[in-house]
Image (cartoon, rainbow, N blue to C red; front, side):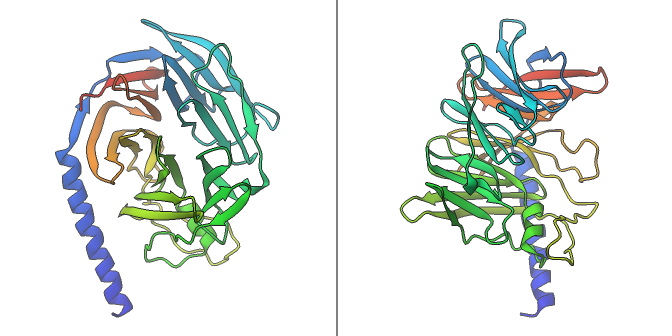
Length: 344
């Protein structure tokens, strides 16, 4: 098959998949209004949130203290602790990735400090942080911790896209970036295909979701072979970018119409909740959205939640079937925490 025919074939497949996915989204849409609302004083634009047992941890890059801990009371929130100054010392952060909630802990990977911090959740009185710094984390970002010595991370390396770290030994995967029809250096692909990794709470499985375009990939770990195996891939929208000429240059080179994809995510035993932007990278509101897509761990789209407010981050209380999100209300110049009842 000639190159031209291959390109036409890929384009036709893209339009078929896009149309079928749009029909699927329209059929599954649910419109929800918030039933809970709190004003968060002394916050700028929250970018991170976690919840358990009536405690919230909210991350805000606009504050001297990056993280604030709140206790949910009957009609209000009570601030009980703050932590995480900007810096390189203990309990400090420079470029923290989104919080990842496990069964009893929260982990935060700082890609600048190459440090994984963790603390128990829910907190008792104050948050007590322990940190893990390993030389084997160099070149990795968005790290998942599976147990005491087993980690998985996205990379900026020229040799692999995903890496498993087991007892300080790196096992680069042979998995490649999606075939998007663009030949580009691996370092550029690493920037183009930035995203979030989410671990299944009780299985050796995880999902990758793209920050640009619209892509979901599901993986399983083979501990015996120290391998990462892909079992589902959904490339709905590819990122739009042009190849760079200098292979050593670190640049994504996105086009002005490139789509911002999944800007925040949460995983439970049954579902993966994804806050989808759909705005171009030049849009000032690209990091806010009111559309949360819900997938199962087989990659099936279950529901599309359309909320009454744009959120910048959210979390889910699976026991009470509540979704909590944070946003900045520009009209009233207020930062809000909103709660939504999920009846599905």
